[in-house]
Length: 334
Image (cartoon, rainbow, N blue to C red; front, side):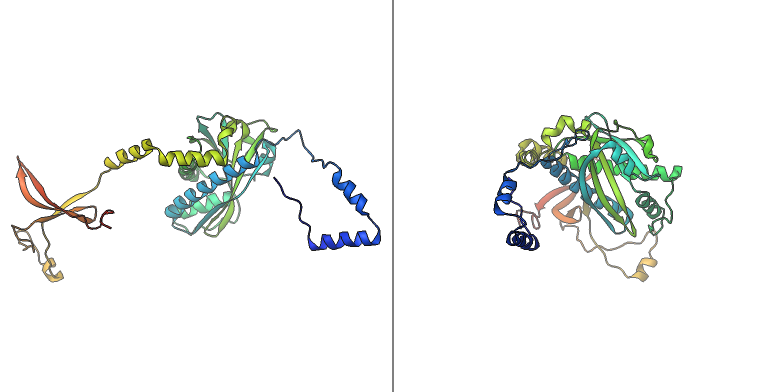
């Protein structure tokens, strides 16, 4: 429930002055308070998204911004800063008119949801990414221009990675598979819904090196309509808690970990030589190891010693027999 309006000190002084001079009376103020306040409503552009749903979409894309920020920072090896600037609802026509021409407009699907959505990236940002990928400093261009065929192929890869980040962010609410369908440069060629249909517009402020610009994600209401009940903070929190406590999710993670490949190395021994001795080594030379024949060998898993073993032969293959488990450094030991 909204609280009463808070007046500033200047408004209070003005009201007291009006009362003292007789411009208004206490009865007039009471009458005005009793009058029903009317809010203007435009039937041509009705509000389709509640404040709670807007807040949920904002939080979803905050996670998306963090993911794409991490990917681009590692991929471009430069200073990246991307965050959500705003989430608004407007008509599709208003969104189209706000886009520059040329621009980089990716039309994508969010299966199993029906319909298309748009990821629009300012050309300054796109050309800075391409310049950085081609070995340049990532400076913004002096003048905006369309992409060449080679540049378009490069930016498609970046957008596909952005789609993966979007899938990861949206799985907090619903499992979707964003897939790019087409890449356009002219906003007039991207009529995915009728002009008067309502859309939700997520605007991200991006700074890549010295280039700054906006990234816009436009999702029509018709696409999100089947999952509108899930776009609430209460559903998000309860779904997250259920996933964390689910034994099925724990068993899935365990199965995936059990299939993970890790290097196992048996170290026969070590020897220390000088650089001069190393340069003089030739075929047939013998290096004396520090390990004796009767000593146990070390089994290194990843980059840490985990077992002790004895060498031997099984059939016609070399093998080792584990003689000791080294638990130092394990979670239980710590």
